[in-house]
Length: 138
Image 1 (cartoon, rainbow, N blue to C red):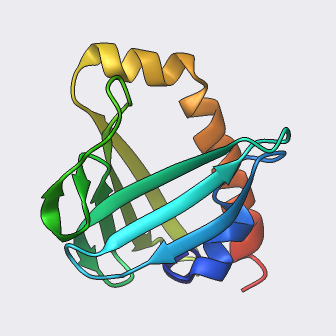
Image 2 (image 1 turned 30 degrees about the horizontal axis):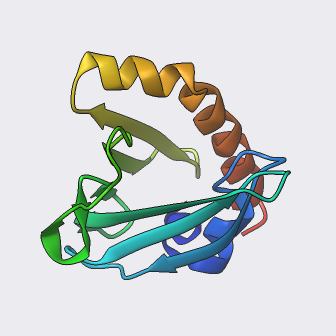
């Protein structure tokens, strides 16, 4: 699971719910480092996402935010663009597997609701299924 989250070529395989794809991914895996992904729709429209890593505990915890640009700089996101902080927690579950927990933190309930209306929960659920499928091959 850790490798799938921290290796650009692996992340590109599962991160965006199909039929969308992730043609580009850059990872600077350190606090203050960049996480950049580009999501492409089936029609070819691209969505560039840039965030800043906040915390990295190898094989246990990974967090980043789109509210900050790399280097902890204020984000210059477009007005109305949703910002969030994500936390991924991984723990061995005792049977050779991994307990996986993903937390999305929004600035307020309105942003959370707007993100949900865009299909965020369903999209992350689909991406998780794709992640599990990939992790089983690693």
